[in-house]
Image 1: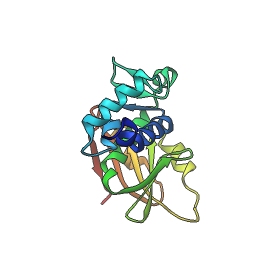
Image 2: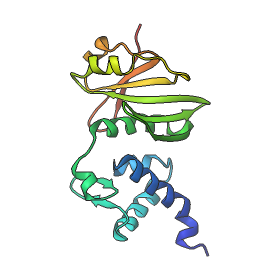
Image 3: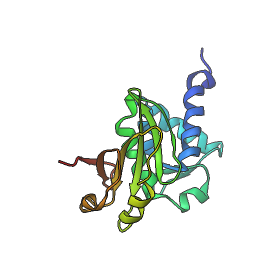
Length: 175
């Protein structure tokens, strides 16, 4: 007979890493990191919450490293995580990025960056990302409103997307 540690050990450590790294996730996001294991991850979230290793907010179905993280949610990061989860089955590695990059990940041998451009911050982000880099990544730009896309002039953009309240991402490309 296997112990809980043998069954959930790898998922528990990885789940704690994801929650600590991204600060706050919805329960659905936490489950989608592990395709086909949704119920097991929900049970693991409940277990980790009872152990006080994570904070679970029943009002908004979010899990956080602690209660202070849930109080100051980064909406751009939550949107970027939804985008990452659309690629999760082919993702080899993922991590938070350095500003202005929210998340960087490897998939299919390519480096991707997910960047959130808040409404009204297009010009600032254009300037912040105008410089050249040694190893260009493929950039996915998350916008609050698709009307922002015309004002964004950032190099190496593979596509744009907007993320709805339920986590559904709508993808766009320039013609």
